Length: 484
Ligand code: NAD
Image (cartoon, rainbow, N blue to C red; front, side, top):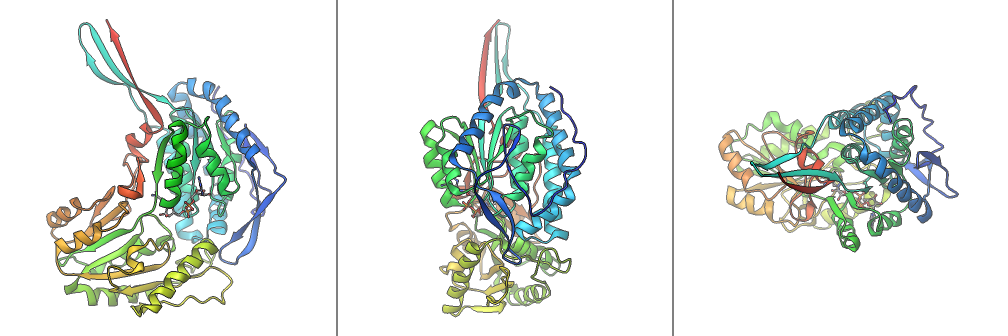
């Protein structure tokens, strides 16, 4: 088998038709469900509603493809993954538009960035290796550690970054010799269905299968005896269900879950030039981001001036349809999340917290638009501080000393990421070292890389994605010992 490059780009009619990908073929379903454009709440397209039988067929196809795919030399699988990057690239512009239409994020900024980063990821991951590690090589004995593929991997993705988070799973999973069944969020299935269509031009049948439909398909995957691993990104509540049901056949499990990241601005920070960076760290993707800064702690000596400048910057940002080049923040992706935000906004109002910007959702608008909202110094026990809002609302909280802010930052069941900002780098690093999170940034934020492992502590996850460790999580460790 050799990798074949795609010929011409697929021309996407955004209204469809869309189909499942099972065993290298497009599969139509009897039933379909509406996918809404969150900027209008009009039906964008009909997505195929996969049944339990479709899921069974997809898992069976992935299982049948596994022996041939896993037997290929690593470099040959790498060539296929590179060809997939080329095929995605050929369809890049249409994927960007489709992402904006189904997810809502601005086409000219976040959607372009997400698709480009995702394709870059696929291309770069294809070049990575997991070499054999020689532990011992003496006159009479050899000990080696190899990494062998697991089998069929079930991938389950959320609706906030469907392209990037989907391809973060596909590329390392296939490179390491596994086959995959992917189930996208029912809110944003369309780009992922196109991944399947594009994959049919590149991979052997059954290597990558895509099944869209309801949450019950996810539960079917986590219970299925022929799935060896679940790679899941989504909420902590669902992550717990995945882990419980994966116990049935001791599945390998990677969970990338929710967060309530603290950003800590120390007294000596040169904060004025940082306002745009800190604003977008919180409000990028309209706050629908696992690693968005969700609690901004600012030293009391600078807090009032900081809030004033932050509010001024926030006031200048435009919330609107992501297809409009003037839009800075798109809508909330779905009505369920919009309703959760309405409830949180009502709580902020009912408690009389100070809201120097935003605070009122205009429900007469057709789309799921929520204004940029800043809550000034709410109590530590408030819902807006304790919960993951997943929307464009941010508490900015004053603190007095470093011990206090570290304790507050860590006082959460989440442990995804955090950031510390200060002129005295060593002092900032000392604070960063005490944050109980999987990632911490000092005087920068949201840097990711192919070789940088990413994962949550505490209830933000289990295991990591990316880096050699992330690649290794798609494999079994196999120890060989030879008597010479
Ligand atoms: P969700 O948990 O509601 O859904 C995620 C996926 O799980 C969807 O595909 C859904 O259909 C599926 N699912 C639902 N019930 C299931 C079940 N019982 N078994 C198996 N699968 C099931 O999450 P969401 O609302 O789509 O995403 C938002 C959440 O994801 C936020 O909490 C956010 O912080 C988190 N997130 C985490 C990361 C990370 O890398 N840590 C990245 C993005 C999003």
